[in-house]
Length: 201
Image 1 (cartoon, rainbow, N blue to C red):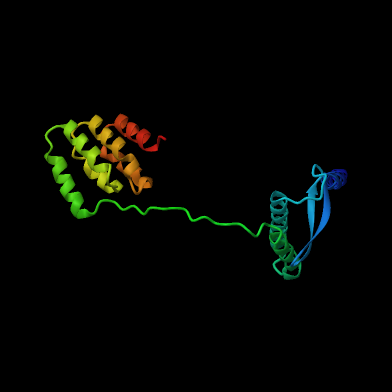
Image 2 (image 1 turned 45 degrees about the vertical axis):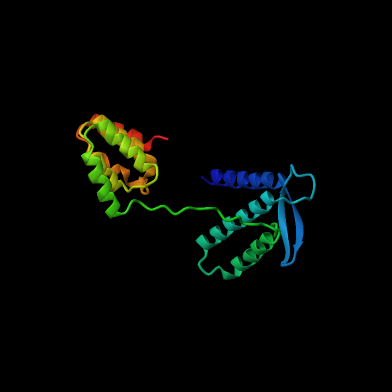
């Protein structure tokens, strides 16, 4: 047992030495003080890019995690690492611009207009006419999964119900709830087809 322990310690020392041999340390001065940067041996210059800075930040965060797990009274040990992380952050480019993402808020058809829509859909005599009407209205409107459930119940045949799902799939405001409509179908084969439509790309 003792031999195994000694062998393990020697292996660990060799491994640490090997890892250190793969890197070299340079000292960088920033406005918030100096900080040591580990550079990979493949980096033959002293240039420090953003990836190296991020890797060094990550390694210090791992050190913080290890210290926090080992010692609850770790302020004295943690504070220097925090200062180093601040110094590393100061190495990152300062002229980063965040471009606002253009977003559009979408809302489902309100209850009043949905009731009118559902009534008109029901009054269509043939399935093809119902599907055509559904395509026309859905091109300018969005629906909830609850509304989709009421729509597919207006169709008699499974193929038409599934076609309605295909039409409205991309117009759902809450697609994460679509699985709740599985029981709107009677047969397992139709349920499986429904799930494939909803969860296919």
